[in-house]
Image (cartoon, rainbow, N blue to C red):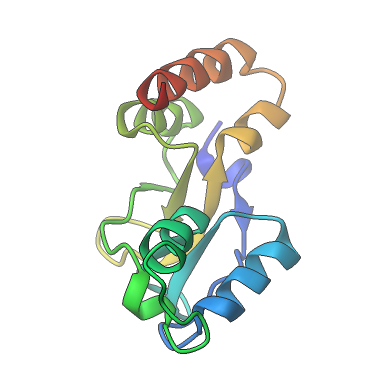
Length: 142
């Protein structure tokens, strides 16, 4: 099975100009902790709830006047839509993350979706893979 078969396609995203307050509100509305930042399918980076808390709130930044572009992480961890589910899980395990941005191919690198460990687990046939991956990721944060 390929990543494109299980990913969340058409992910919500924000522009670099979006305020962190609006970003946090969108995360709350979507019940997520991660938003791609870009224009259409051109990806500039990502902002996580952790970025907002540690790099803005903890430092006393004004969330109305600080933008996603000010806080985005441009080192985006990704996989390709044609990758196997096993490759994506291995990538998550090695990078110690629970989700990856999904790009179309290595030449264009256009945003196609997001795949999470939760997406993989919902398939049911990857229970052992999900367990191993979650265990490895959690070791890093312990």
